Image 1 (cartoon, rainbow, N blue to C red):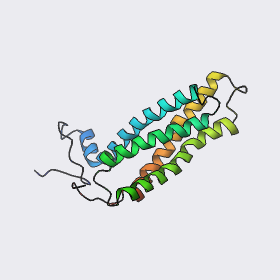
Image 2: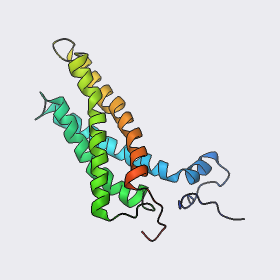
Image 3: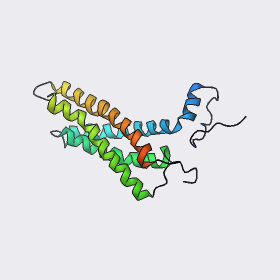
Image 4: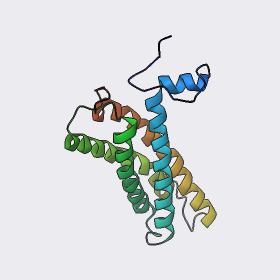
Amino acid sequence: MTEHRTRGVPPLRGWPRQGWLARLAERHGELFKFAAVGAITFVVDTAVFVTAKSTVLEPKPVTAKVLAVLVATIVGYVLNREWSFRLRGGRGRPHEALLYFAVSGVALGINAAPLGISRYVLDLAQPAVSALTEHVADLVSAQIIGTLLAMIFRWWAFRRWVFPDEVGPLR
């Protein structure tokens, strides 16, 4: 019996071969790794955002969001380069990093836009709404809507421009 490999992603050891989740992970391992990195950076992003917004950047939620995304982007580059897209690339690291941060800069704008709309267009801020409504609106617009839109864009752009080629296990 031959072992199925897709895009250089090794099969997950210890998983039942017949399970649909195992087959899905083997076929889309890169996407699963990207999603795992996304989950980790989401936690980093949320922790920095909530901390900054609750302390030193209380009157500047969009600035707090930008700072949080920048910190999460640095963590994401290291994890994506060394794990998610480890078998891709072919560019020199400086060029790859420059492209990664350029794509992430566009994604930063995509991520912050829903928060800006929530705060400054829909006026979901105090005194127009309660403090609880403001915090919920900030979290939903920045952490859910903005993050989902930016994640979709990053997945497409990273595979298209930053890590476009498969280079094999020697990388």
